[in-house]
Length: 335
Image (cartoon, rainbow, N blue to C red; front, side):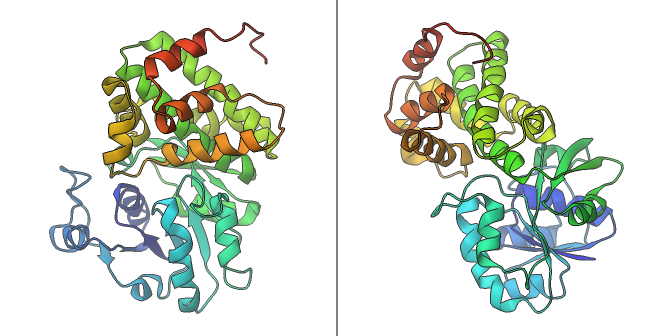
């Protein structure tokens, strides 16, 4: 099977190796000539993995048409803000029905839609099979090294979810299936905000007790928000919930954690927000969720998202915001 991969970054490369190991033909589409040359000529992706030698059968190109030609699957690994415009370029190039697999986590930059909804708004049922999202606790830095990993193939269609499950599964990359698209996608986005908060508290010098409390209350908060949107509560006790949350909040591989850590150490977000050039989905997601909750009467509280919003968008002192969280009115843990 040929899999067209949109992107030449770390996640694109990690998943390309999984698919290549499974005997599938992979071709990566990118716009960075250095990354493309690295993959094709030096068989590496030095920008992201300094010590990983890739197989010669993993190839890349700057031609979108060549990438998707004869592809059975299109795997999305590019930042969410580029997904819609890239799909619009792909639309006239499609000759046969394909399965779109989304591995981008976050919301549409222009509409704030979930990625599956964005995909379906651009490509019709006549052009694509039911959309699948690949979500779970997985850092590319470990996947590319073939370190044992488990994720979920999430789709409203069970048959397509199982098809993608088989496509990726092997001895080091185990894939489960789920039909809770809403829960998994909102969880995948929301946990990035909690990861920014986790980085902030680490940068401020707080320890394991603090992070455990943050992750636990973060899980409660993201599940409340997800259920308001139509998610199943049990989803948040699985790989796309607590699993993804723990790894993103605890690992130095997490760009969202790194962003928060930098902010915590500098005691203000202004410098980071002014000069940051890395993709950090939690920054954008925080504003989307905060604005959504503020503009609707959902009857829920999102104190962690609100706190991160104050730090990122109002340049509030992280130390003071953490103190305000600890001084909130006392309540039952279930509330």
